[in-house]
Image 1 (tube, one colour):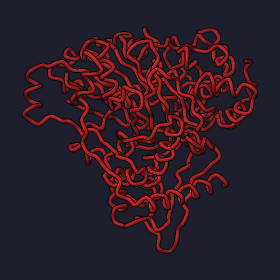
Image 2 (tube, helix red, strand yellow):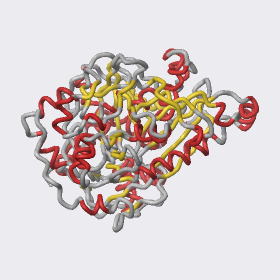
Image 3 (cartoon, one colour):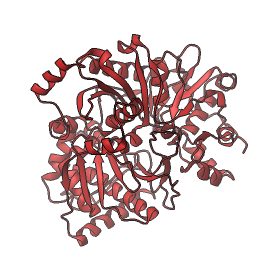
Length: 555
């Protein structure tokens, strides 16, 4: 394959040139995580937390811990786990997202590092024996978000392009209609879309002055957030990623687990920029003592959704989970079988304990909890995320109102970058409660679309869906999810499964945990929801949703 022509995209100068000062850019302040209010409200019920007596006992006993770094889209978190996989401490620091143009989403990579370091240091301060009591750390991260930095100075050459950013949509549309489209999909298991890292790297190299030459000469490095954090923790000594993150770049051959030179040529990415790919559970380096107070082994890496799958103890084919966060991500483990979707889902690498490949099939929804944030920050119809659930529960139904939150297009199974968000079915009787309920119901409707596509691809009916993430704290949403799916919903005792998965991976690599079987014994359900809705009503509501989606795709 040959590289596509590289027209310099319009309106890029402000983004690159203003990287340091960001004038005229809208900022979201104080946002520690989508639906953080809900999560805090329900944390005492969801998490396996220590009582005061237990906390004092553990503090005095100087027990060993695992440290998890969980770098998300709107916050950097850190957590400590003990030998039974119980969470001992959790801290969070907000990260700003910036929106310089419609459809563009950026972050400051240096701020990401500072926020993660702040949350991690505050977490370590709660360890009984200080940093010396930590056996190893694992890292999980927002996937696809793209960072390019100077190898010598360590400074990013442009803002991080966040996974939600749609600036490369036109480039991807041209690529999808090219002669190479079928080969790209076959090699990567992905749908050609601006979501993935390849086109984001292409954009940075095309629009930052002299970046192409520097990349060819080995002066620039690429990494997703996992790679960036490891590089910073090791003071530039280690430049790696794992299979789960690499599989989201559109540059790795999914079958071989290696960077694919034809794909690199297509996106114009020099191999010298790329990190080494390693198993998710393996010791890759050591965090320098100057950062965390002691040298700590880095022994686990996984993209956030694969980490959540691991944290939910979904180690075997057929087990599945759905994470309700900024977006919504449903994954089903397929074991050593590489899935091929006929329903526009994604084939991806699952977190692995060695170099042998493990796969999953995934459906990705771009806007889920972010729609609740929009109700709060843009419409102002709620003051807190928790209020959306209270409003939703105050009425029997939406009165025919549907909210399709296609703010950045639609993800799986539609993959329509031109679709736009829409409220439909409004009448004079519609108010705050109807709109808030419609926003929550939209999360459940989109999840049903993913589950139906997974069942069609696998040929097996899903018996239950394990859930996690901030919005999984909402009993209203979980009951409606069970109703609209017609399936059992199970919430685990610790809903912070992303951080837990990273800790599990680090623990297995260092002998802190002995086996997957041991981890399976740690998993416990907090609450189960069974469907209560009549089948006829379920299908009526879902039919209305599908009509609303069809309308928003015609705009």
